Image 1 (tube, rainbow, N blue to C red):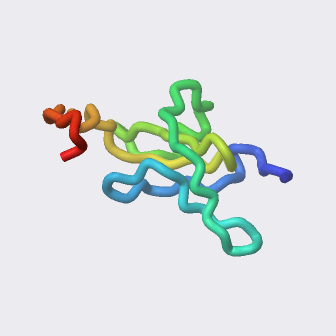
Image 2: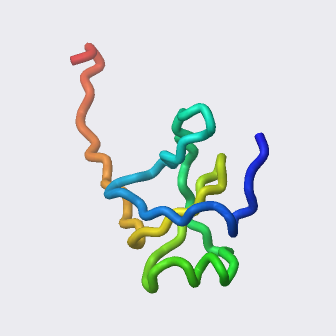
Image 3: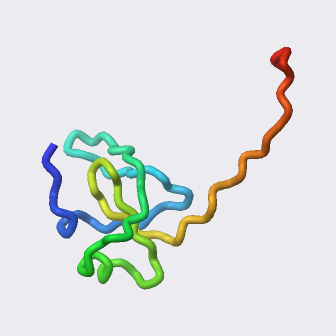
Length: 86
């Protein structure tokens, strides 16, 4: 799979609660790669994004997204589990 340089890739806005890439390939299939915060983004990519936005990059297709800072994940509430299975 040949990838474009990051500067040529589109800069997309993240949807609410989005954690995976939804960029479609040439066949029309979504990528579904995980989005990670991109701390080492080059200056030309940072200037394209709005101020106060955090940059995220897909780990599979390298598409760049911008969005609000990610909040801490919801805490999992532990519940008692019976040894009998109910």
